[in-house]
Amino acid sequence: CKKDDSKTVALTNEQQVEASLNNFVADLVATPPTSADISNRIRQYVLANSTFFYGSTVTLLDSDQIAVDSPYWYRSGDSLLVTSLMDTAYHINDQLWLRQPIDSGFAIWTAPYFDAGGGNIWMKTRSVPVIVNGQIIAVATTDLAL
Image (cartoon, rainbow, N blue to C red; front, side, top):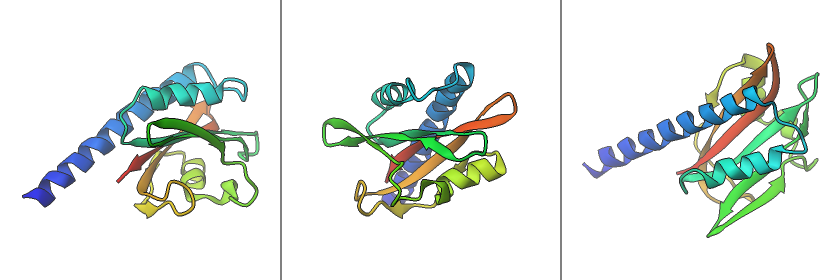
């Protein structure tokens, strides 16, 4: 019975991530993000949601759909910290969580993975393309701690 309960909770958490991220993306479509405001908007989104929302980014894209900015806000204990995913060693433009929504135009969930060297926790990522006037201008994500 415990196994079934944990699956129910995980599904509920996924549904909460999907609903919250869809609302966040709707806000980003209504008022497209800029490099000047995106970090604070992500911070407010993470603060407004449950602690199982581990972290979030909105990766801004240029007209060739290449990442130009990607502040990542995440929880560490009782703190909320920020880093940039634009580090050249990370190869952001090759990451499946970014490429799949750009290439397909659809939201995706990644398979569960261990975020070694990052949060050092098991998580999965929900990624949603931000489409304005038929163009993907960004990809918004939420990492769900497992």
